[in-house]
Amino acid sequence: MDSVTTDDLLQYVYKETMVQRALAIKTAIENNSRVHQEYQAIKSAKSSLNKVTLLSPRKEAIDRILSHAKKTFK
Image (cartoon, rainbow, N blue to C red; front, side, top):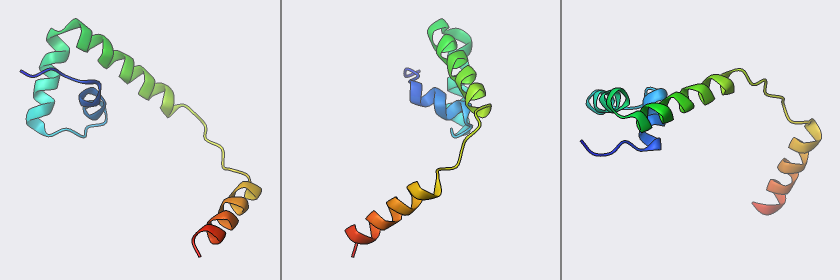
């Protein structure tokens, strides 16, 4: 089996892999301690991201961006 990359693990965690590739990644997670540790770190980071409260930008910031865009893309 070819090596499992961080990108592969990210796609696996977010369920963005084809079935055959997902099975290969799962096998690597079960049999390779480095891959398993990286997988656990990615899962932990995803869990932390899900708990973040996002704030909306201030109206003034949006107005400035839109104003700049109008000037730039005439």
